[in-house]
Length: 147
Image 1: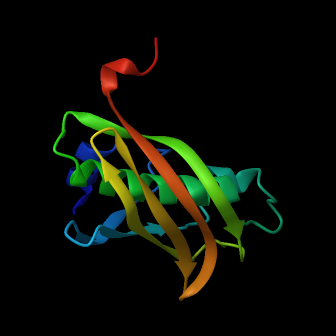
Image 2 (image 1 turned 180 degrees about the vertical axis):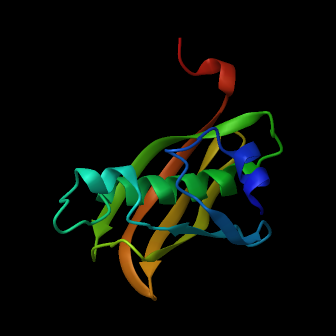
């Protein structure tokens, strides 16, 4: 998927869009692989340990959730809906993600249903696990969000 296709599947925009590209999408097997290029120019590095910058774990989980959200959206036959994060379980952080790293975001579908889905998500850097979790989603119309 190119950048424009990602923007159709996700409601996020800069600076909160954390998936730079989709490297692989297999809807039959329910697998997606995305990529986040982590640069020192990211705004969060200004305040998150500025003398020893590491990517906040919650943003690694968010990047995984965005990749998983694309998978759930694309597996759905309800393209007018978006996948919203509903649950995170069994989250573990294994290693720091640093400026210059390429974060590989791999999600494998555990459940796909008309109301949402669930994925097993793993973030790696150079084939070393940085974070992992099970992430659940609910599919909603975008006009159901906010006030």
